[in-house]
Length: 140
Figure 1 (cartoon, rainbow, N blue to C red):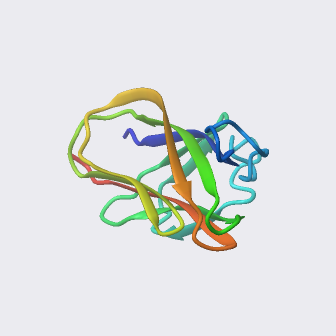
Figure 2 (figure 1 turned 90 degrees about the horizontal axis):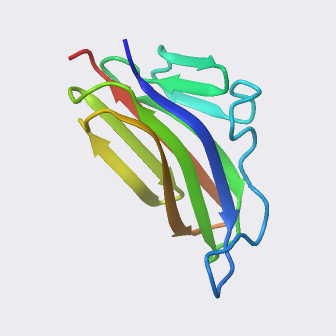
C-alpha cells in the first residue's frame, strides 16, 4: 500500500519588503530525523510510519495527522514550505495543510506525484499558530 510521504517542513518569518528569510525555522524536527519528536498526532494514527527521514501517512476510513503549535507574532507573515510525495493514484485520498486559521491546501483524489516542494505565505493571527497536516487514504 502506498501513502503520502512528508519529507521536510519549514516555517520562517518573512521580511515586509520581500519574502526573504528573516528568522530561522520555527518547526522542531522538520526533517523527521528524530521520528515524531516535536510533533503531536491527532485522529486516526493507525498508519503513521517513519522511515529514513520520511514520514508516511494515510489511515483508512478516517483522517489523522500531525501538528505543532508554533510561537508566532500576530499580523506577521510566515513562509510555510514542505516536501510532499503522493506515491499512488487517485481514489479515496485526502491531504490538507493548515497554518493557524488559514487552509494552505486541501487536495482530494489527486494523481500520484514525486516529491514536490509546496510553499505558501500566510499571516499569523495570534501569538501561537498551529501547523497541521491531515491525511486519509482509503483503498482504491
